[in-house]
Image (cartoon, rainbow, N blue to C red; front, side):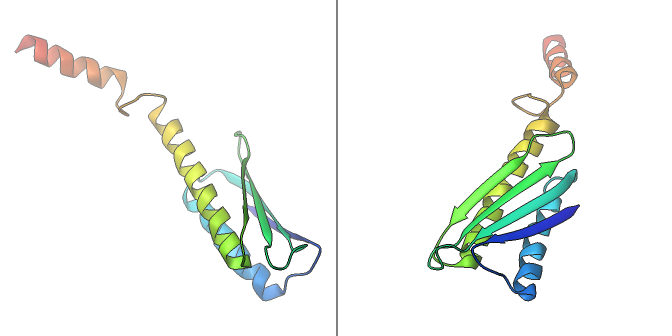
Length: 118
């Protein structure tokens, strides 16, 4: 998985870049098939930096999050939380295959047959 960090209207130190990379690298825990993460930090307004993250997943659509707050780390944490939620919801939807209760159709049929036979 590639992590690309770019800045607009300013520069980030190497230490800050490595911390951001470590934080966004945790997103791989929520969905295994991530191929690239692009982080853009806009420092045009130093009082309210904007952090935008675009996550590309294998054979899936992109996940995008954007956060602006009074502190760079608050922005990073907020956007990472948004993407964690998007990835969890997507993985839950994929693994349940559209079933409301998460069970296979055959499991529900078997339980109805047992109830009818009793």
